[in-house]
Image: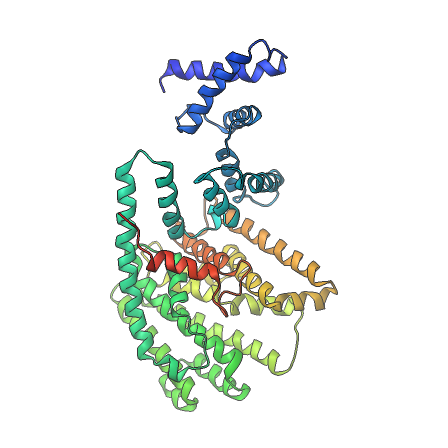
Length: 465
């Protein structure tokens, strides 16, 4: 838009705003309608306006909505922006409630594709959405809008298709490793969640150059899943005592002390970390694998504490439960493991920071643990016992803690950041998958519909070119 047209547009908008307040609406009814049609045209065609700040956007949105024009994008963008709120930003809290209410009303009255955008946003805002799933969804949305940039659409589809092929090759390779373990026979008591573990890591980083990192952390996640089931459902208390001590030693000499199924896990864990250490040592980064092993040792320790509580029929207080539960949820271990195969921006200082309970990892672990526990009622039982409240009161308090944890995450992204952006993005993306999997579903013990739909979209369904 040239300077002259820009000036005319601004004057037009200001006149339309002033006329009703001066009670001259009837006199200029025709002129007002024509002016609004021009403003609406610019809005619908996304014509860039200089000085398009929040004030200008708000005026345009109010004028068009006030005069019956069907605009929802402004409301949708405000809703999305409100999910970046920090502590104390009450105005964004109010904006979130306001926009949620009005978008729910609009969802059933507007046409496709805006109706789909609204429905998707209400289900999961962009801040909490897995980037790869956003890409897949918006390919369809932008096609429906009839985007003028056909080359961009072709590129997006081709890029998605190429990466999908790469990811399929990766999971096939990991599946061969899983099959060689003979999980169905040797670990018949576990939840077989290979695909779900890979999907979680794919949500964390989908880019081709993270293939080695993604493969390693997928294997680690699968091993932790088996470990969780050993401690939680299968091993005897006496076996678990020996097993925990062996993991702390991390030495092949301790294998013979273990029962058969524990020997298999222990041996494979040593192999997975040793293979990754061989790769990392070529880059002078073997220290990363050693730190990841320390994280696995800590994981087994907290699993044993929980097994001891179960053995003694002990329900801990919330103060006792949370420090253990924030580690046992596995988020911290997976975060540390996800850094191992990454680029040079991840330094020893990054790992040291992660080992010292930084706010962003603590917040993410709170979300991971509480979303899982709300489904299983574990944390609610502890909270109800400690504070003598009803289940609904406990539920409300835990969700309040989850919302506050998201604000902590948002604060940690404000510059200057305490850790490299590459590390922060891994933490955020891992959390996004958690939000997807556990929103209203016990999606690990029983694979939920969200997981099935998402895995199908990323790894099975093809994108037509």
